[in-house]
Length: 220
Image 1 (cartoon, rainbow, N blue to C red):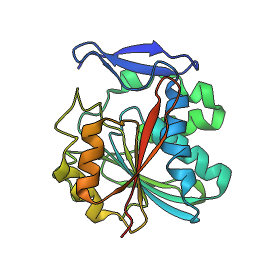
Image 2 (cartoon, one colour):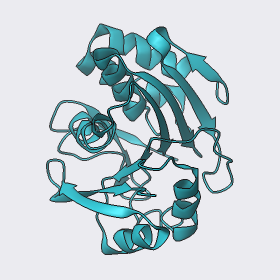
Image 3 (cartoon, one colour):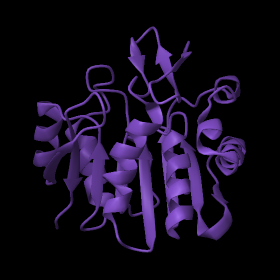
Image 4 (cartoon, one colour):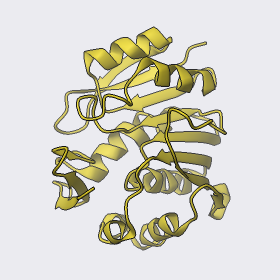
């Protein structure tokens, strides 16, 4: 799939897919959006010293990199599984500037993330463990009980097959009680599906350029 690298307002890159007329991140800032939706609304809302993260839509690996950064700064032990059906080629990944924007250590870790083999757990310093999964989220059997789920698929209008009750039910069953699912989408159809699944919804302020976002809580 052809992709183009574009610069967003915070100086970080995102990818644009002409065929879908879709971007991987907001033009108002790729790093800014990911930090707002997944780190501050998701990861920071959990107080436990050890956290299990499951990401739907590994994409560029930006959320994984930002989670590593948060873990190092806050002395958290994290196990991170991210699933992606269509991994990006190395030629594209090597041109993204997230490491440059986040510092030398981040540059090293971003490279290590993308050198790591798919399907195997990779352990880094201070108890940070991640696994990149190449597969279909609908059929893949989750191997962790997530404390937080980053739901970062393309939008419901662009990738409707991902946004469905069956998948949300699968994720809900796998999560621990009190677990969180965070997503940038606040569409009415998404809210209805999450409620039908059993989640309790919290409508939060969105990142720059977006009024609202969703945090769904497994309350039982």
